[in-house]
Length: 122
Image (cartoon, rainbow, N blue to C red):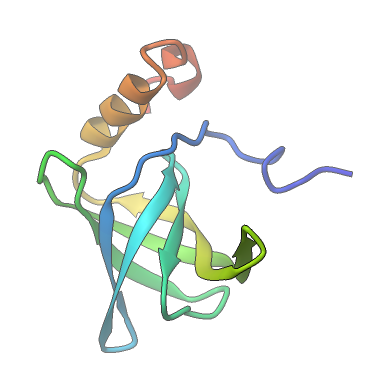
């Protein structure tokens, strides 16, 4: 049986950076736990419903902001160490409006250049 991970087109990197999601006239703060050119897992306290499309700013550690249009693929609660419940969601990027090359470079650095052939020229 194929998993969501098996269906990913882009490798995920464990990159943590703050995000602000603009959802239904409100702002939701969160943090990426992993990131790719195709989407992200985001830890946050509020969860938009699956299928919801929204805009989000991502701020990598270098302080540069970039804007993406994304869709919630799934949202769930996760148990960590049998105590803490972390609310998070998986998003698919529809469009990276600014910073695609910057994001690509950050992901490639995370993998120390070993996967540039998987990232392609996108």
